[in-house]
Amino acid sequence: MRSLRVMVVLLTGMAGRSLAQPPVPASCGLPEQRQFDFWIGEWEVVEFQHPDSVVASARIEPILGACALRESYQGRNGLTGQSLSSYDGTRRVWHQSWVTNRGQLLLIEGRMDGGRMLLSGAYPGTAAKSGRIRGIWQPVNGGVRETAETSADDGKTWRPLFDLLFRKPVASPPARVDTTTYRPQPPDGRDPQRDFDFEIGSWNTHLSRRLRPLTGSNTWVEYDGTTEVRRVWSGRANLVELVVDGPAGHIEALSLRLYNPESRQWSLNFSNSAGGTLSEASIGGFKNGRGEFYDQETLNGRAILVRFVIHDITPTSCRFEQAFSDDGGKTWEVNWIATDTRRGP
Picture 1: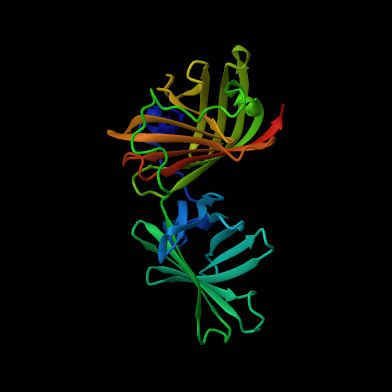
Picture 2: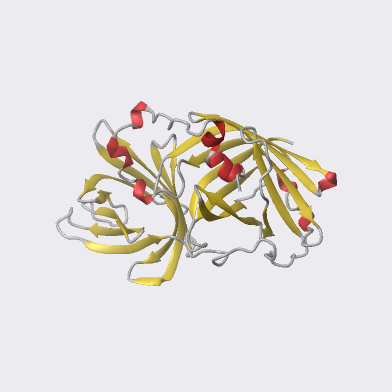
């Protein structure tokens, strides 16, 4: 729809058709530093031997100019954790630090071995001083298999700890979205016209954007800047102004959001300074503190679905994600992640 989403993804085309890929920082330019990129994505985590058993959701994203990968893991058993993985070019090893809401800390290191990422280290889960743990990540059928094994005799023998599969989440909504009839769930006592009240004000914005979406590319660029959100028509509309800068250039964009009291839905209409026109609207609403908006667009001559999600809303922060699907909504690829932190009323 040539929106802030497609338009910014293709911003270089509007400003001159092709913008050179931003230089990777010299400290992160080694080919080895792309070895773990196959793990990047938004995943549903299941037991490998029991794929009907969903145990968690996970997001793996490049940060710090693609110098590191951050994993955010949310288990259905209440376990949450984050890992930071980076390549040490001096020692030529991968390093991963894993921490959880249960006070666990794990430090492991290793290398690619036969198409698999193999990391190991001391295992705090055993009383034996010679306790070890090793994790193995390998691409499989469009997903990633992660296995872990422990040893109580310094690696002479190993016992399985877990065997998981990171796979693309089941699509929602179903295959094809009709934006003329799609309706959010009935309101839960709130006034949907006030759904965007949380965002009125001034924000600092950090933006990550995937270059060349739906091409298999895992190259991301980072931006930082500000977002201003103002009420219009006594709250029946609001105007968002985004200004960010990064190695890939400068982005100025706006979103005009309009509330329809008949359908009790919001429409999001995007534009940027490079294109100068309003996009086709994406339609949706909020449920349980999460906003979802959908539309159908064209990307590089192909019909795609676009999903825009607003979530992790607190009084001082919120998160925006955009994903594309070229298979009717069966799978989604995230290409735009913006995190806002409030800086003023």
